[in-house]
Length: 72
Image (cartoon, rainbow, N blue to C red):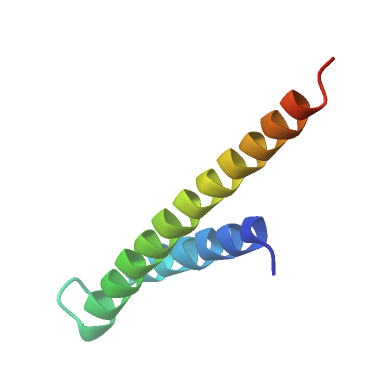
């Protein structure tokens, strides 16, 4: 699974959890469990988004380096 696919899947899971949370009673165990899951999805999404940014910057850096090495 690629990074973009993982981000997309986490967004889907988070959306599903948010829908289920709206249907749960506010002080129920399900509500609190879903709240925890949503927080975890948010943290995972933040981590993967940072990883994607680093990956993109690394690719750009490599491109610039290769370009500079082959300039006339």
